[in-house]
Length: 578
Ligand code: BGC
Image 1 (cartoon, rainbow, N blue to C red):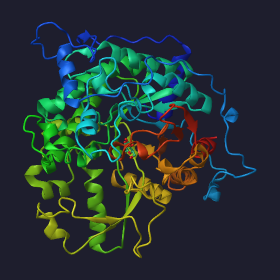
Image 2: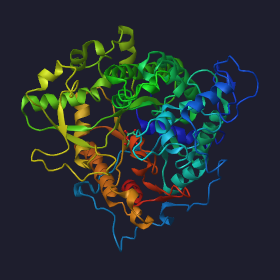
Image 3: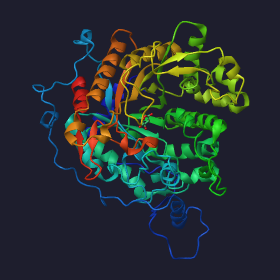
Image 4: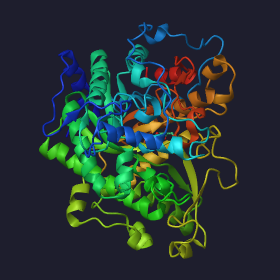
């Protein structure tokens, strides 16, 4: 384990000087070349991993829109530097000024790791190409009416799958030294387990090569919500312990192949996602044969999912350090927000704590004794699976640093009903039994709202400074913290009629300025060891249930011709680091 991200980053860059990129073939894996468009005419095979089995799996999802590109495009000529990009002219309109004038001469620590992030399903498109298996998101977006607000799917999107070389060339020209993408598990293992799909591996070989070639250091997430559909149908995906072995098997393949070039690994994106994904999936997705409508996985699926994600992470991390002797750092990305207690009254303080316990505390085992917080155990009782002593030992210490995706803040308030709620699983507020709102005590909103598709978000840059201090206070053993995602969906961006309007995304620009200033204040004034910050997202992408019309990009994507253009917020972000 390295003591700081920066050390590992410079290591990756110096490896690059060798300029020969080669990938080991992890032993013990069988490889095949799948093609989901090619049913065979031969007699039915009994092989559960046959190409026909893949074709049949896709038939459950239904027709997929074909890609616009059919081959990887070469990088188009890009300006060679940031200053050559068309950008806001300060003579007409300056970018957003810093609110933190006291930090004018304060510098970031050397080797602070920063860049932009995204995830495979949200940007790649090419959903059924080159032998990829379906993920649950292919199924949900196609087969569950209303699951995605604007009925968009991940079929085509920005087609980063074919345009990655151009995207990487532009990152380089803009001055980025790092990028945080995710790898699609069902591209590598179309069935989640079984044979490796050769074209899927070739794709990520090419992506890593392109990054290494231009000196951009990858920070790679292994799983960003695209659970292979086959595993969901076979045993309920993350709600079943079988997924731990399958995930470890997949993770070992990827890490063994790319570790030489990847200084930072995120095993799992936001295990807290079990809250809304596993609890909310309609049952017909869990069991396609029953055809029953409207049932959800519910609270059991939610906490089973959390249980197995943390265990899967810990098993990979243990293997990474102890057996594989990896060169980089490994952790998982938490999802969490700051909660300011409404007052010092006991009920409000308890509410703030419970809001933490049921979001980040749920996955705090790596920083404690490997177990769940007491409040979860006492409230959930048998609903919460139990870790064995051996599992707790593996979980404890399994993160090399703390990664937090933190977008916004809340006020936490308690009520006299909370205690009764904690004993009543039928109560709508169970199991948190802790109130929160995005307004101060006088009801005035905590900050300007984001777009209508993200009703959970107000821009509250001051919250991140308080949150970082709070994290360190809650778990003093954290060596350093990286803000692995933060970003903003500009209101009504999708309704704007001209590109000119879209590019002037001042509220997002203000969000980035304020957020970064507060991270710097946290390092400088509060002495919190923050070692990195990643803006979300590289460009507009598929915003899950909110679909394509909610945009988080620092670059605008024109979904007709697939061009990308940096928005004002991109220059705000880059200027801040310069
Ligand atoms: C997720 C992203 C998502 C972003 C904005 C994060 O929690 O990791 O996939 O797009 O939030 O909602």
